[in-house]
Image 1 (cartoon, helix red, strand yellow):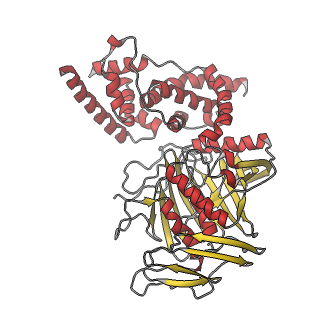
Image 2 (cartoon, rainbow over the protein chains, first blue to last red):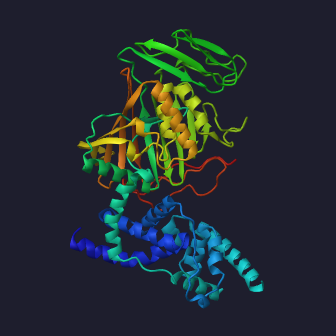
Image 3 (cartoon, rainbow over the protein chains, first blue to last red):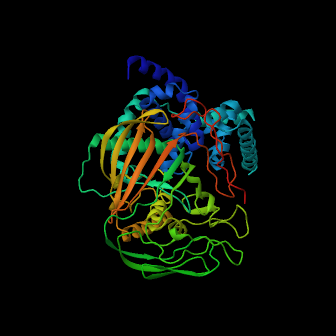
Length: 152
Length: 414
């Protein structure tokens, strides 16, 4: 890979990694999401000429990461952080883990990170209306569960 | 809800440690090494091909025995890498064609034991004589046969072929190819394969049976047309599905034991028409270059060991059973292995596999499968499943300069 390619890839990494990482972590949890992100970006590095010419490289790499994770067949888990527990709702880890993968993806990216449903759809290949549906259902489940937690 | 939004972001960010450039580029070497070391475990790799046909499907198979281990590491590794890349794409389209086995070229004693041999929905009993042995089909749609023959020609029906229409109004289609022996049919078709989770749909037209759509989820089969295997009685296109291994009787009954068993190997493969298992590859050599669909490809000749084909990494219990059954049928037929030419494009994807399976009597069965639309073939659904079948709207396959055209991969709702 030439020096120019490396520079271009570094710029690509800086732009794509945060979004790709958040999306894959939302889908598969921190550990698996990070592994998937690293796998997908390693794929991009190995196939950089092709990836850089893609119209939607982040969307393609999301699928690469998705395939990487699913081949491992490891359960989805959000381990509750040992620190900063007081910063957010203590039940959040379990509640997010209880959502479906797509509901969790939509809730985290749209509600947590303020992505538009269109942006989520572009990355995942889902129709915006589908993302919206998953978002609504996921939020409804979270609200319901949080009420139970608050009153329990 | 603003608080919840902040909570979610804080929660997620609490353990998001960015992936760095050094980690990515260093991971490249690690992945390659891991891929080599774990090929056997992952099952993945390596080549194959084959072909298939479900009650009419077709495929291309590739297995062969070789005593020469010309494991030219570079070529073999490139094939393995191409397999890995192709599987990792998640989905691809296939187009295949398959020729029936050629006649034997030398006398050979073959012991054939098959139970059951079936050919679609048989409503009437018929009997035909095969080189002195009696082959019968019962009204249940299956038959058992045992024949020991010394044949210098394909073992086919010596008596009149069975009826092709039912006197009682039910369909009876059991052409001569349904009887043990090379038999076979020229078949072509197209389909889509999802690799994770595995799901495959194939459309083909089988002489004598017409159009057939086959869906395979790795455990069960739904055959629309032909024997309507896996479909509910009287239902036009839905049903609970029936076991993969139980489908062998129909496939082998329709295509003959050789072509049928080779096709069952494909149907039972965790990667469908892209049947791969590194442990089965005994050699690989780069043989030249060519083009597939206008794209330049590098050609690798690969030989596969049938002794290794029983162990397919990633296969579930049902698939393993079906593979074992097919290998037993092939062994009884004198199968000696397959050679295949694997075409790999500049992006590292397997674009075509041309395979020839060889039998001890000199008979050969060949097939060609072409792969395309990597990562953009959509989601294959089984009957009763719901969900989106479309690939990402902006999906562009590495083998295509334009957005993919989605073909129908949805299944009828139950």
